[in-house]
Length: 142
Image: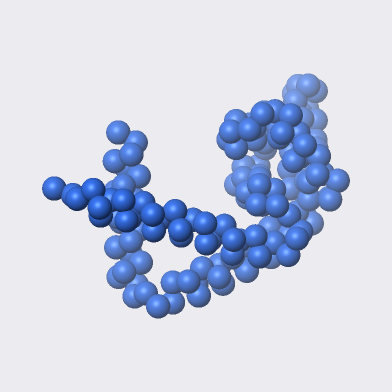
């Protein structure tokens, strides 16, 4: 049987890791984007077509908050708006080349940071940690 102290320690360590990574991630942005804007750019890179309502739903924010973030990204030239040919009421959001480059640059710096974080671990330890986290996530879904 798993002891409560061990679960509590794991939870504390996980929270510390998330907090530390959040701080490190902010440092990678060089004041260019916020963390929310970065995750939105990543989301848009993963989906060819996005609507403001989709973004609000995925990020679990209000439609007006999503619109505010989208407007900032648009103003900076990182996304563009395109009306649907099939339904003119639908406005698709897409990354611009400038937005793709920004995302690519930040991702490259983020991956370098992750490599430094994991360099003291063996490949087997990284694989084992991934397996444990997957197992926890699977259990949390039940």
